Length: 191
Image 1 (cartoon, helix red, strand yellow):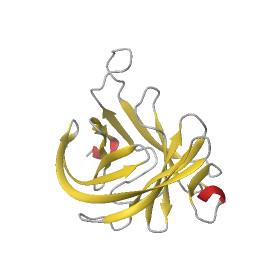
Image 2 (cartoon, one colour; image 1 turned 45 degrees about the vertical axis):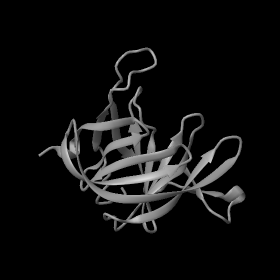
Image 3 (cartoon, one colour; image 1 turned 180 degrees about the horizontal axis):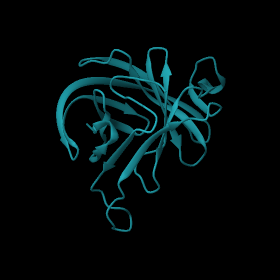
């Protein structure tokens, strides 16, 4: 399993997230439970590659972890893989069974760090969007507790987004616009 100080992925680890955004039928949102599982090593991951057809190539996911999501959960299924200079996160495209590069987390992540990564999307053809990311230290409180985090601000195909990562725990909050999903519990907090 790939390892990163700000996004650990031990097999079987779980994170439970909640949000207050009601479903389309007005009912409360279902908690989102994310579980680390072994990834099918032959699953294809699509990434930006200037030498590839339409600027995109694919590789097998050998050694990667898949983060599965419960039915009704608000996050997409993700694959986390070790990259050359950090962690690569691929997001499942719900309308088709493929994982596309979404963002990367540099190996030596620290406050003030700035980097770019390429997001890959398929919609009537391949597209690659460069996104700029920046890390800032921020203490936040979520239902699972208060944490010192690195807030990663980025902008991508879907617009601005933010993810808060706590060392040894991983994502404690995801935010897009006015919408946020926050950590309520994790097996990595047991102790």
